[in-house]
Length: 302
Image (tube, rainbow, N blue to C red; front, side):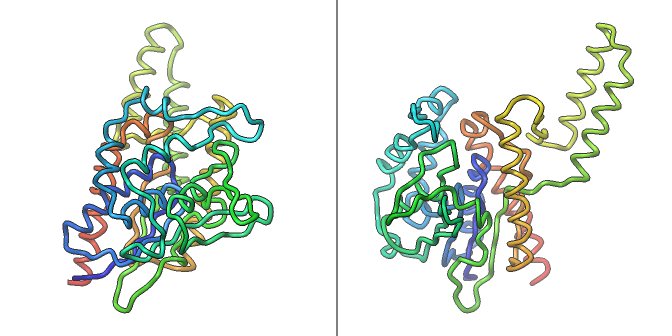
């Protein structure tokens, strides 16, 4: 049985792809011997390490947009929008708290010190304290106060913590990154959309035809892939800014610690409430991507 050191990047709802990826690894007989993650990667990775993935998945796949919104315990604070306590409480009802050092496999979560900018590494202590710190998106979730530090999302400093996972002799390093931004592909999409707009005669019929052509463009080989229109509002500008940061940090992480198997999902996939309420679909996509990556790896090492 081949051992795998598994690393899962930050990535919001795209991180649900890690559920299917883990299932694919296990179905092929790989042994996940250690896990490290940031933000969404720490959430799914930590729950798997605690043996709670099936219970978590059953609850998660039952969420619809209304239930997702109901999990948002909105705050009146000037510093953050959501307390983040309600969703953790729901998860802990299905995956009981445990200390990281008592997990059956080594687990690492990363967070960020909001004031010093330092990376904070969790390898011991309460699991959900580490996860809650690692997923604390600045201005979105309430920061976690821990040992005198104020902690926010680990993706701020180490989006793809390939260098933090515990290694064992003979294992392979498998990383799943959901922050890929393909500049050439996006520019091609934007150019095509602009060309459709220019060619429209701007009559009612022309606008209808242009709309149909645009929808065909969006559906042409890009499953759930549409670049965020940053001109919409401040949220999309902020979202894309974080995306660029995560993409850059992920690339640096890959260059410094190249994985044996790299799985990638575009940043421009499964945004907003759509993503959080379509976890099963995202997990299936993750399983497919992991299967494709393992097929390639196994062909090369047959």
